Length: 615
Image (cartoon, rainbow, N blue to C red; front, top):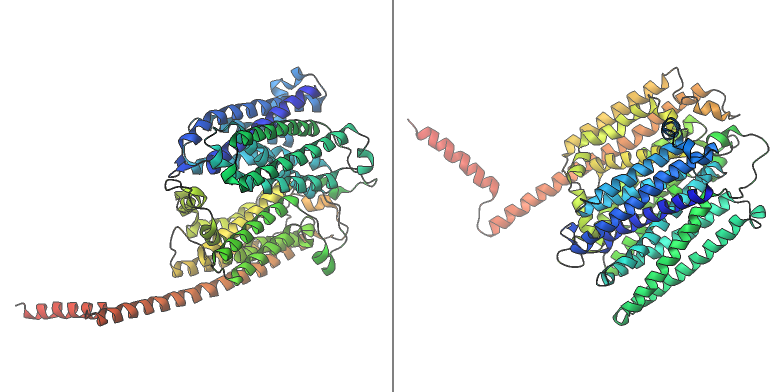
């Protein structure tokens, strides 16, 4: 049973990794033709179909054998329709595995008709989401250092899929396509390899009991995987060394190196499949039962003080990985501009850095820690993520920086990464989301949908729920402030008067939400905070009302600042428009031409004279 389970997990892993690599090559590594797949990329659609089918078979088999293992029954019991339906609809792990299978099947069928680069990018994002979904209920999810273990494993799998999948795809590309794809993949592979090593180390540190692990088979497989990873990094170094001497590359020998690397990766993935099918020697559990550890995955912290809030740190590895990636890309963009001789305003960099620091404090810092245990601290974190940090992100102008530094097309027909970003910014979907009313609905309307329904209590029960909330707060805030005070390009021009009206509406709606929350006589968390049994939090309803008052105070101030900034921007734009009109008039006068105002006045005088002359 375990051997068959490992085989199907291996099929699922290698199939999904190959899907990621194929989509990566189609969307970024190979040339495109004005935003559509080139002939070389279209050839990969057959491979995408085969890889998607392999992933689908592996995912469906994983569901069946996982259920049989949990029940400790033969496979025939897992095939019973009632038992299987209960597993995939009522058990969280079954739901995640079903979602992964649906994604795999969707990619398989979509591969037949995919033709545009933007579609490929969407499919790649969907594939990565489907790939990591079951991780939130894996062995890591049941161990200590919950956020650290899960987040690091998610980063590990995503980075490994980009690295392994890319190498497998390079191995099967036509020889004439490799010189185009390899240089761009080489830079990505370096960062992916670094992420694999760091995230794997962090996950092992968070989960394993090193005193007991060294005498187990699990440890020897881990050691073997580490050795193979070192070999892969060495081969990657040889790749980059070869590319540094591009004029003297022996592509025949280079192809052999790629095939050798892909074979080593296949073995490495097989080891990973075995590891995922076997329980690791975990850190010993605490003898005393901690309800917070069982519910939130974090031990109950001591009563909050200023020093504990500002100095405590409970790392959320997934959010840290996202933030580190954003910072690395931003710094890379600034460095590219500097080397080119252009200047990037220091204030924008500082604004972006402060926003990233605020996000980290609200998710992994002391505030993020206590946000799991008290609604008042949750609301402070919400306001930072939804109100304060987005302003810093928007004023940092990351889209403008990306447009100025992303690579152009490699020939006259290729849209390239920059062109794809431009196409996304001017798409119908972007035009829809940047509508001020839509942005306001996400920004303020979602508050009522979250906090005055059962959704809040449900999301608070799981790590993925916390992640969804944090990402939603952040993205909704970025969208709203991008529309009203954004520096980056906007697909629609919003008049300043409309922006001011939207800001006043946001203030009113937010105030109404806070008052409704403060006056609520029942708890809205579905019993989550009570289940934690925090000894320093006795009156949950009073804490909820404090959270409502905090939301009112912290929510109004950023909107007022945005209102002032919008008014100043309006005045400056009017001033610039007046200067432009004066310059045009002066230019026309210098050329012996009447200015526009004089011409219009003369036109009105002629009309009045004609009316007087008519009988």
